[in-house]
Length: 90
Image 1 (cartoon, one colour):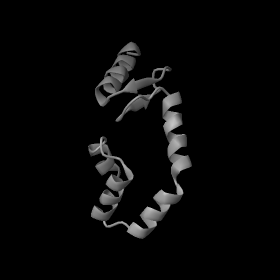
Image 2: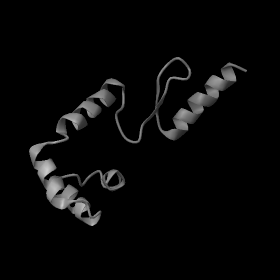
Image 3: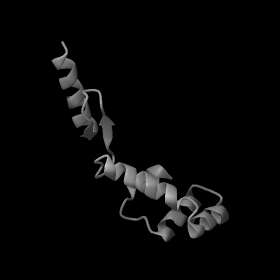
Image 4: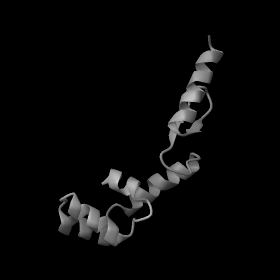
């Protein structure tokens, strides 16, 4: 499900999610019930707010504190930050 949501970030309405669940052969009655009663809503909101507080503003975002400061970004920016940290300690 995660991959489908990531690939289709502009199509995340409940009807879209139900379509993905059906395609993936998930337990559709349970999925619909969980979606309707907000079973995971607080967890999703909590994770989202944690990301916001950490400076995440998009996906994918990778993070490292190897240099003593937090670096957010793409795999390339994270690799560059790690290489710079290694170079500073050689």
